[in-house]
Length: 228
Image (cartoon, rainbow, N blue to C red; front, side, top):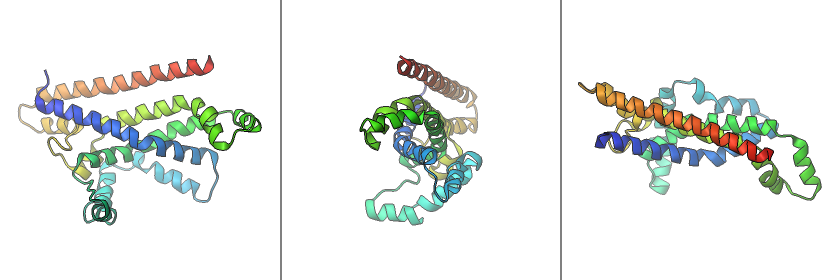
């Protein structure tokens, strides 16, 4: 049986992960399409910057977010003055940190799907009088649905496991920013917290496996439907 603190951490992690996917889905599709279908000056630089969260230490990403989006940071001060929004040390900031870390995975999955689409199908739809938006919505989008689904699940799973950027940007506040990884860290530092830490490890493994298996099952169903 989970304690109230463990249940709270689980609920917060799920909330952050869902919002992470929601925040990255449409931008992910847009950026993936841009990288897959357009050549422009600075494309390699954009692609490199996009993948920085995958190679930089997560703590470095969290620190940069704190500097930029903290209340005294250039963007954080503007958000606070203009909209009364403060991301640092809030659960919304945890969503932002997870989104930054998960965004490259989302984009890469969708981009690979876009690059695998037969462009002749889109050209055929265009010759029948469909404009670019309609071609994308009726032809391209259904064909890349497995990639979108995979990207969404990977972003969800990455958010569930995010630690370094989150603890640096929003700290480890019980009931506000203490997600499952942060709760596990707290229990590991607490005397006699081994049993609680193991329960949190088991929950984390179960959630990650469920997400990955769900992604595989859903992707297969989408592929069968498209092939049918």
